[in-house]
Length: 162
Image 1 (spheres, helix red, strand yellow):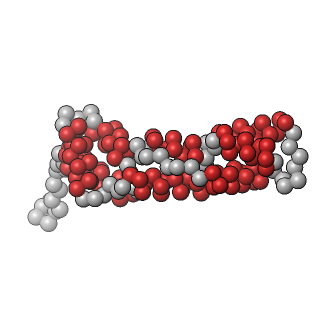
Image 2 (cartoon, one colour):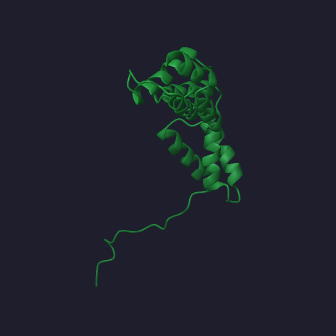
């Protein structure tokens, strides 16, 4: 018969309360990357919204994050996300729609940067000496519009730069 005195003791798993679990989940989410308040609420609601004290746990977790200054300034977060999307050559309409979905304020348009990004996309797709037909210009216009560029930038690229 085995010696039971030296056997490891297993403690049963005790599920933490919803409020503690919501705070832990908030810390996990914020540790991975910055989140807006709206984004945190949405993710916590998916996880804890169905539980009986889930809504109060979510509110307490958001307040906990605010008290510890884990939720940054929404304007700074919006500009950081905007810069990331600018590097991916996304247009201002795409960027502001993305920020709106995250619950962040819109950023202002920089016409020179928008034109530069749109031209970079066109130069990446076509040879420099390419002769654009009417159909090709329409295709370029649709491509730029689908990437979120404003109509003025698309018009400048099509009729002034090509």
